[in-house]
Length: 485
Ligand SMILES: CC(=O)N[C@H]1[C@@H](OP(=O)(O)OP(=O)(O)OC[C@H]2O[C@@H](n3ccc(=O)[nH]c3=O)[C@H](O)[C@@H]2O)O[C@H](CO)[C@@H](O)[C@@H]1O[C@H](C)C(=O)N[C@@H](C)C(=O)N[C@H](CCC(=O)O)C(=O)O
Ligand SMILES: Nc1ncnc2c1ncn2[C@@H]1O[C@H](COP(=O)(O)OP(=O)(O)OP(=O)(O)O)[C@@H](O)[C@H]1O
Ligand SMILES: N[C@H](CCC[C@H](N)C(=O)O)C(=O)O
Ligand SMILES: [Mg+2]
Image (cartoon, rainbow, N blue to C red; front, side, top):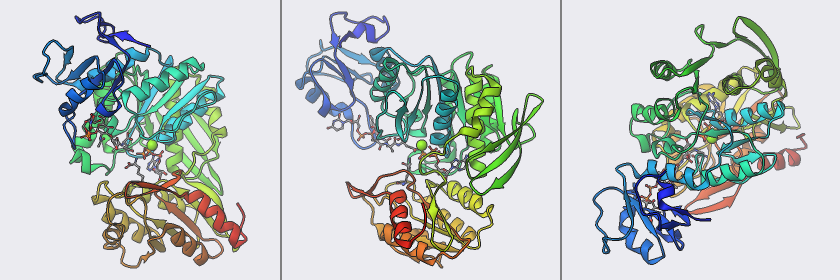
């Protein structure tokens, strides 16, 4: 499959004889007639590899203005924002996207909301997909993913595969890195969702404002005229996005517990493995039994309902389908019970607010004692560590500090940065041993939340990924303990 460079530029002036067989940002992956996108990176300058790419068979280059090539007749597209241009070109290259697409951003809850949208559309009879941390998921086509928001070529290739397989509705996760790097700028979005914004990724964005601006691009730039902004307004940043949406004349639906929310949670009644939620929408009050644990899951489920309704789904059917939602792997997932009668949950909380939220959700079930096992990822925002330690110390009765994905950092150093604020923590570096110690210590009526890795099936140590799953580890230990799954 090849297009001309002129076609990729959307009819803008360019040599119609230059053929492009694919696009890539990595000179090492260049194949014959590929367009190489030479990007100034955060670690190295991709523009240094232009000659390598030409030697490997590239037919054209996309890069920033002012780059001099050995052969000045070689086709070069200059753009002061090459990442955005790359995303637009990737969209033209694959030229197929599901007719109804929504994107969701926020620090916590993106994967859950995207998954719930897929399920709600599925219940309405649509062929639907979700794309994000859990990969590309649909009944007809699935693939694993490396990134929450994939690189534009990977993303548009997946969207085309979904369309070819018959998918008409898709929910995409928009990570702050993805938005900041314009990965989604070629995607047509009917509605955009916001869950919340709390501390994360300050290693990359530096300040909370910088982090917010990246997320705000979804509402301020990506969502086109006629689009719908579906915003949880319980968080202060939600109101700012609400103003942005108002200023741009976008459709708006606010969600949350606030009196001002258009889709408003009135109350929740906790059940052993779910909750009854009462909520109001357009002068009507609804009551639904939601088979998901935790108030935050009610917020995510209603945001998903808001997104599917804003993008055309039937209101009553969407609300009714909430009672059939399946939990998302590794998100407040009840894995089983110990022989003595304690319950064990696996959750993906990897931010201070995420950990606080799940521990409070667990507390709402009145456990006799609350235990938690967690660590923090290496090569990621270090400021989260002391905050997560403090939160665990305040909210759990027993805290086990263990390893998450140390990546290239020293695991013991990461643990010590957490333990600095949780002095009574039990430190056990080996994650399976830490989970085993917590399970052994549990009594009847206790709860354990194993946090941080959720659905993950590997532990990243150095540049190796070793097989490891919290869910499988808990199952194995509960079996050994004589408990039930
Ligand atoms: C920090 C970050 O987001 N980095 C992204 C960024 O890379 P970079 O600018 O740092 O790349 P670099 O290493 O400096 O290299 C610059 C350029 O030179 C190229 N290069 C490099 C060497 C060479 O020999 N030839 C060559 O062409 C590279 O391909 C690159 O295009 O741009 C690259 C594409 O050009 C992305 O692949 C890369 O994502 C990396 C893989 C990554 O790990 N990103 C993570 C942090 C991420 O995006 N995570 C979010 C999750 C966040 C959340 O959950 O909230 C996600 O969406 O998954
Ligand atoms: N609405 C919410 N408010 C606060 N915490 C939440 C909320 N939703 C999820 N969480 C917490 O965040 C964890 C991750 O949830 P989820 O995977 O849906 O988020 P995400 O935004 O996709 O995360 P990532 O940034 O890794 O892609 C959950 O396991 C839970 O601990
Ligand atoms: N998308 C998140 C995932 C974190 C998961 C946690 N297990 C870790 O490794 O820090 C990030 O890249 O920050
Ligand atoms: Mg996610």
